[in-house]
Image 1 (cartoon, rainbow, N blue to C red):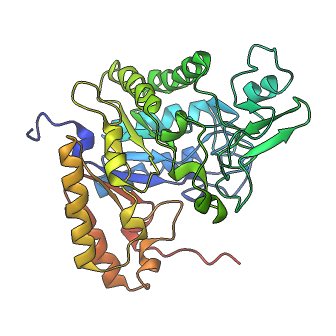
Image 2: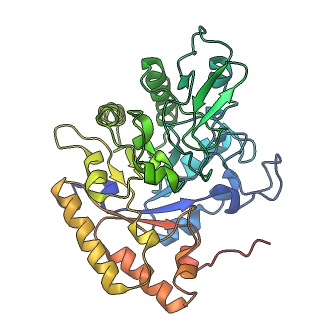
Length: 369
C-alpha cells in the first residue's frame, strides 16, 4: 500500500482537543471563561501550521455534565457551553478548508439519566422504551461500577421499582443494545453527524455495547475493579461490523477509532475485524500512557504491539497523554529534554499518532488547588 492509495487515517497525526480548556471566543455565553467551538475555529490556523491531519473533539453534545459530557442527554445537539449547531457547522467547514478532518466523541454504551429515552424508560415496565436500558428486579451480576470504588454497577430506581445497570456513574445508565430499536437509534445519531460532514468518531468504551452478564472474578470484585476491563463478547463484533458498514456507506474514508479498554493487546486486536468482515478502523493503544520513560522498554513495547496488529492487518496507534491521564512531561519527571525525545519517538513510529492539546508546547498539568 503506497502513499497514494492508503487511507488517510493509517499514518495520520490526530490532535485531541478538550474544548472546555482550549479557547474561549466569548460567544457561547452559557458559561463564560470556558472554551467553545468558535474559539477552536479561530485557532485552526495554528493546527494547520502544525500539520495535523485531523482533530478529535472530546464530548460536545448536550449534557448535564455529571461526567464532563460523557453523559449525553441529546446526541444531535451541541451543549450551550460550547455553542450550537451553527458553530459546529462553521468549525467543520473551516477545518475542511484547511485540509483538517473532524472526529467527534461518540458515547454508545450509555446516556445521561436525564436523556428523554431514560426518562421514558423509567416510567413503567410497558412503555415503548421500557427495554431500551438494562433493568432487573435484583442486581444481575457482581459487577462494580467504574469511578465508584467497591460500589455496585446496579442502582435501584424508585419510580420503576427495578435496578438499572450503569458500568460508570449512576447518572450514566447503560443502553440495552440487545434491543434492535436501540441499535437503530444509535445508528441514526451517527448518520446525523455524518450528514453534516463529520469525518468520523472516537467511540467511547465501544466494547461494552455487547454484554454477557457473567459475574466477574471474585478477586477482581474484592479489589473494586470495574467490569469494563473484562467485557469481551462475540455479539460486540457483529454490532461493530454493522457500524463499519454504515461508515463505509459514506464517501471520504469516514473513520472509527475505538476505545477498547481490555488491557490485552491480543484481544484488542480482534476488534479490527478481518479483511472480509472489517470492524474498527483504529483502536487506542494504552500501553504508552502507563509506561515509564525507559526508551528500551518503550521500543520493545512498540515492536510487540506492531507485530500483534500486523497479524490482524491493522495499524497501530500511539499516544503519550490524553484527558484521562497526567501529561507525559509530568509523568517523566518534568524534564523538557525527556518530553521532547518522547514526542519525537511518538511521531517517528509507524502508524497513527494522537497528540493531546498543548503537547507541542511541552505543557505540564496545571496545579488546581
